[in-house]
Length: 184
Image (cartoon, rainbow, N blue to C red; front, side, top):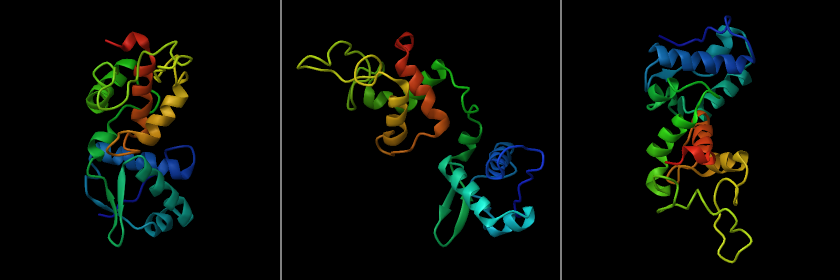
């Protein structure tokens, strides 16, 4: 079966509609991990849209971790997509959900409470920037704004796989670390 997205029931830019249908079809089981997707030309022809729109949709889906492109072989549903497709919608994360993600993906390097371990310290250090022994941390010290720490997380984490945290999962650890009430 060749997958062709049904985008007529959705609104928004066509490439985002294609990505949304792809994600929904993965979550529903219509598409399975490792399944090969059609070339860019097939959906473009079937949907009567420009080839670059499908290329942009596939690029966005790849950026979100939904698909993998293999040079000379094609485009496939990611092997890790079953977990990704069922993540909460963008913007729906909570500090507690961020704590769970932090515990799973960050605590091994940054300590259970962000106090530092193999990786740098993330909490504390308030008032030390003007001293010779400054401590650069998230919050009111070195990274005073959540947007700055979000950008750092987006570019650098996890350490063994930079850009490895999906966009959906980046905001919640940022909120967890930036929120002093979340520190156990």
